[in-house]
Image (cartoon, rainbow, N blue to C red; front, side):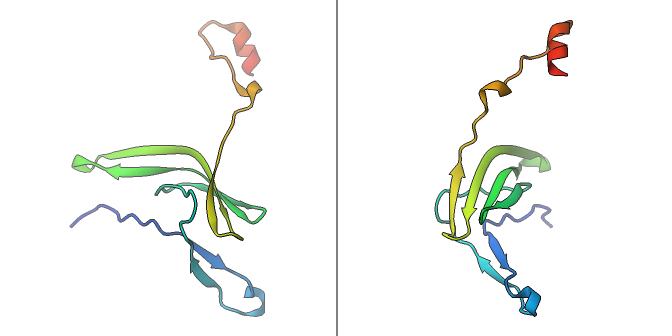
Length: 114
């Protein structure tokens, strides 16, 4: 028997409106309109201003002899829940966020990073 997993590329939303009044939640399959993330697992997600933000994740590919090759993502996408459309968001580093690499015996640099 095969031990490999099955990969799905669909995305679903659970609508909870009316739950407090006893209505049953409903599922809706989301479209793949716009620029959407590639297949992956292990993302970090949150909601802000009616947009679902999806960051990072990993795609694992099983190769010969059940070895796993992993690709880790450092990207950010938003799903606009009103327009039902995906968007890629660009990540920028602030100019002051860069730090010097710590060298052995570099006491001055060691104090900077503490």
